[in-house]
Length: 410
Image (tube, rainbow, N blue to C red; front, side, top):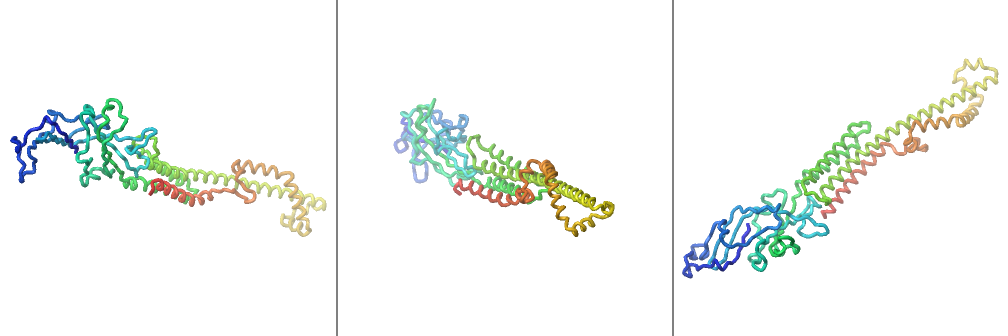
């Protein structure tokens, strides 16, 4: 409701007490003496201030839902209008920050200051001047702070009599006027219930993938992918609901980093899968290597036995004995250790290099890098990744949430 009051000496007239024809103020009447009321459209028949709002959306004219004005004997005119106005709020300009700028960086815990600037286009400051009636810029009706607005709460309305000092163009001579600054605070509960809590649950689902067996590939791969798509969809939905800006919005940043945690889970599964395949190749290469060494040892022992038997002239008897009988005889004669040493020399000098080369070829480049001879296995295995992330993942995410809310001072 906008009320404009001014004096026009040309509209003065005598009241009833001065011999005029209009009304007498008495105890039974609340109407001041000489008051005359008119319908709003008739205001065009008399002089009235040319009121203009500087920050209307697309310069659309404001609409008066209803209006009326009253005349008084001393020339006072009281013009009252209920207006429906669509305003354009300011955004931070390059190199400038002021209290009337809208800033979405802390969404959904953001507070905005949206000004309504009133001035005149036709009249200059030497003809009229704007002042708040009785020094009161605005009166907020009880219950009007939250009524009709589900997402916003009106915290305060601040009035002032100074416009921007740098008015340009057609407004350059209209540096006089009034400003109302509406302080609006967003109600964050919707975003907490519908965005923040579900996104945290999605991250928890991704975390649970570290407890799924690594042999179950489809389950381990599907959980992070679905979670990442859900968070990406939420982030795009939030970004589309606010004006395009280079500002780093708190809620969008929360969703974006949460999606990075989900991506972390997916990458960890890929690493686990790779280590599983590397470990399988190394185990196969180790088995082949040991088999080749055993074959070489058997070959060397057989050659040594053959040579020893020929020296004794007992080749026929040797052919009828079993391997266990030969080993027992060698042990009884005390020459098994000697043959074993000879075997080691033969294997190491003639065949071990080829066996080692085949091992490296079979285990692959990554297997050679990650295989530890001292441990006899890979120094980093797939289960190590899962076990470490079962502790690191929740601690890192909890720390991230704490930092995010710490930036808000909560």
